Length: 127
Image (tube, rainbow, N blue to C red; front, top):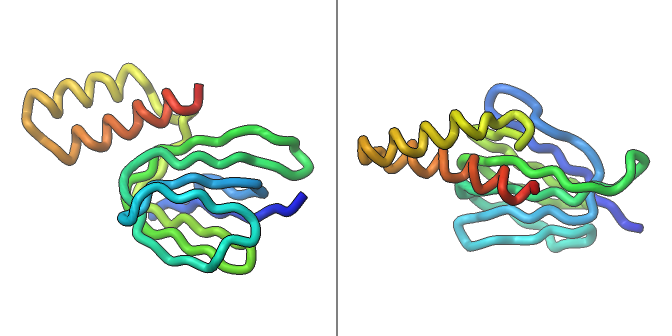
């Protein structure tokens, strides 16, 4: 089975790296799915969950991350997701994200509300 190599990097760290059969991300042009052999692309990442269908020696599974802005680049079966902020779902404290969402709503802070909402959507997508 063909695979693509994926690197999910945040401004402060490498979040995830490995082999995948499919990656779905939200871009400024809409949601996009990238599979091995996809046409080269360069795009702007929007805040949203990124879903990675893993493959390779470790077996298949799904990795989901909450991503907040950045860029996506694909060429020669190498996919780079360069995010301003990225968190894997197992790193997200759901109760804290729910509190942050309620606080952001009460303060009418759209940016904080969007970030908290993306975290919660990523956790929901991983289940």
